Image 1 (cartoon, helix red, strand yellow):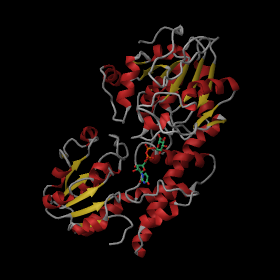
Image 2 (cartoon, rainbow, N blue to C red):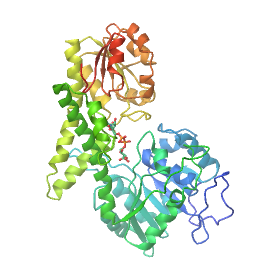
Image 3 (cartoon, rainbow, N blue to C red):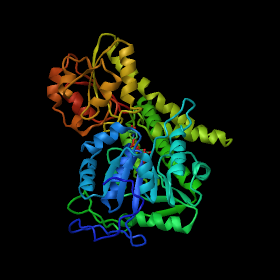
Image 4 (tube, protein in one colour):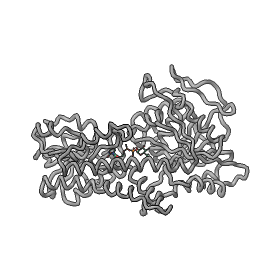
Length: 481
Ligand code: UGA
């Protein structure tokens, strides 16, 4: 289905999706038509999932190669379950991709903005992509639009967006509503997170916009959709809270959530360093403190720290936002500082064990910033490899999903076909990403393959006693030995 026609398709018949058919949506007797601008991780998952729950979705991107890839039936990213729902959406005629951005803008009555807000050199979020999209929507819209920010943006972006839409809106009669609807998707489980959210946050200014957003998310609120993650049926669960706030609050909620998660990880890492000094075990400590429901067990894993395209840039942007509002958010600055040291801490462990890194063969297991993704943006592995090669170590890297992307960054790096090849004749193996397959390796075989059986486990993935039992010299974070 190609966008372009402003008229909405009249509702014909219920969408038939089998036993747990999702409900079909009517809006003035017509199907809800949604455009998603930006086909990155957020846009693709959002578009595909909205189509999966019954809406008609057109996704667009100004990167034509992405659209060509998608229209050829391939995905530009790896994300579990995404291939299946994209394929289903396309086959059902509810999901399409186009490089015609103006056409996509005109065809949707609701537009999700999912373009990037990368960090600038100052740490602020770069708002130029959002600005460009806002101007384009203003210029191209021929009918009323609900414009929803899904990209992570600093507080008061909604106000700027409203201004830009009004200023660049060329067709006098066209009205725009603006809403903020932050996403809380984790890469690697984004489809599951979209379909089973902890909460749906909408920042709105009027009751009609709130109603439209409720309509969009109704299948999730009523838990009536075909779940591709838990097929044939989902575990029972309560409906997610639908949290209605002002636009400013919704924008702040997103930055505040990610910064809090970053804070928690850095706290665990500081604890890990202290445990090492005091001969305690950080995993025992975090397990016990995490049993307190006020603290919770998640995001307390010590090791190499947080990477990816969200936590590092969002904490930076939040610090800058606070600064511009006249507040020194020193608490977050410290969390960021702790995180930036983690690679140096790992390298120091490797250096201490190997004495000299130069000419040593070092196997790096894991390139993605976390398991189940091929995303290497701000991945600790990237900086680690840069520093290892700067010291003239001979690096051989392996990752189950991220090697194609890593090759673009390190064209001259040696990549192994599997973890065993990375271990072959290595003087050390560094575990950088906690892929489950690394835990399940035949470590006896790895031991036999290495020139020197030395492991520095940057994610506390393996059991120290078991590894030492196999004859490895094993170092991890915050655990005795
Ligand atoms: C994060 C948030 O978790 C999502 O809620 C949010 O929607 C998303 O950012 C976003 O803003 O789009 P994500 O970046 O996919 O999601 O990954 P996380 O699971 O949060 O992990 C971030 C980093 O923290 C990874 O490098 C991970 O290895 C690291 N981490 C995580 C730790 O070092 N220790 C932990 O205990 C947990």
